[in-house]
Image (cartoon, rainbow, N blue to C red; front, side, top):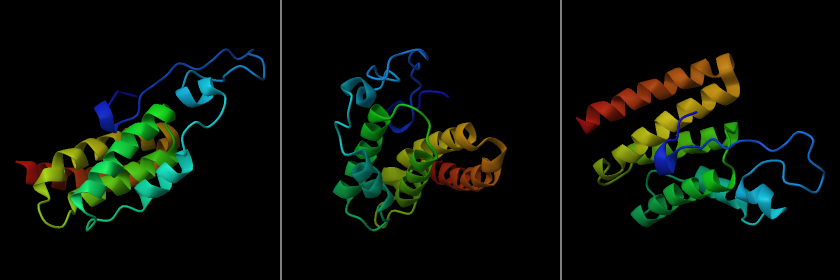
Length: 143
């Protein structure tokens, strides 16, 4: 999985398979802290609640929340892929000046496709095809 900048997932090496029960199971900040240091569930719910008619500040905050979620959970998850696709769609369909968020939409769609392919494999092909169509539309609008 490639690093997709501030909007995409990052790959982190896992921990030792023979580690004790008290040792972190991976190198992410959440596991290293030994507990959930940030409200991951509320971040995910906030991102999933994004709408195209949200204020610009809210949309920017949700993009930042996605980057924070990637820092807290630096591995591929289908829930993150879905949240990323929903955020990309809100950026793409932004009411007002959508051009401001088209580049973000492009990056989010690309990262979501990568994450979907990684987590779902062949089962995710239909989702990926749908995102590819939306990504092509975004790219056409960027030109």
